[in-house]
Image (tube, rainbow, N blue to C red; front, top):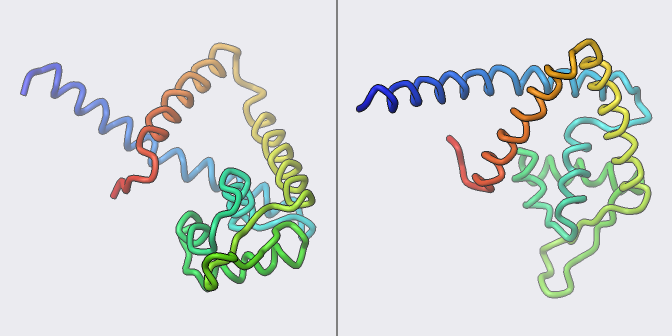
Length: 158
């Protein structure tokens, strides 16, 4: 192995460690903010479900469960709460009797947008003290990180 390869390996491993240390901290802050919004809003799993359905209209219950990382029974309970709040429409698939088709309602889309805006505002508040250069560094790093993980797609990392 060349010095360049060894250096790159160490650098990518160090970077991976920083990603694994940082992402949970970011998610913890987002979850805390969502909990602080009060009982009139949605839980993090509900938010993730709405966001998934926003990106994947017509998804099935098993697809939601896989995305959120829960059992189908847990996903079903989450969907039931969202249906009761008129955030999700659940209809039986005419071609496959055991499959349900899930879509956001207008109220679900609106609530998702409001939750996103509120959380964006809170995150922006955390970044307010940074210089323009520091914000640019974060932006550039996040763009690169997003590109890397978009290439991975649905492949398993572990």
